[in-house]
Image (cartoon, rainbow, N blue to C red):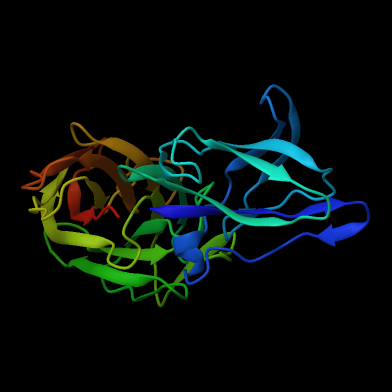
Length: 327
């Protein structure tokens, strides 16, 4: 559960009582729910008098109000349900009465996400000889969201250096001599309150790279990963991510599939494709491609394997399965 720290700062008759600071004793990520719409209505709730959007720490304020009675109404973001409010009615609103020169603070509402939700994805690629790969931050990513990145490189001997703040989960290198060597690195990052517009990976050598980032809300930011596993794949069009056994209900299963060819992918059965990227614009045998997918698993247990199918030019590759924990 996290709070919207509603700060009702009020001015009347020349008094300036706009207040800041709320949710005392909480960290910004525990307190803040950014991007919620807060409406100030008349006492009957029939007219919207003003509107604010909650800031990064979950706060808002209304100023220069006359004495009287108002309704504060919350319009939550998708995938959130209300856990508490000041009058215990769980109706997304409360009534506030002000007298002259009064300031009210800390009218707190709490919302939670019952499940992890996919936020957005972004991808990028670089052709042979380019020693960096830049991927935009997925649109709408909020503080506390967990981002999962899959970075594919060719050859397998390429050494990847991630951007600051990204944690390596799995480094897969397929050195098989029956096909072209390639590598797949999987990372995660908890979004902070100030994220850059894009992230850059660098390489000591490259004959092509491609990657993508998936962003999720509702993940346990302190311990985001329940379980994870990866494997190399022999020459084939089918690139299979291994089955892992989750310990918790409502995990988000995230798979990454990489092949040493310029291809498109058909996602695994029952999964939603988040991105599909290759290190060039024309499909063929020279390059590397990567796909990312996700699905919610509501009960703990084996995920089963997940097979993505490449469109052309069978080759060796790598695949990974990662299960994210809900809050």
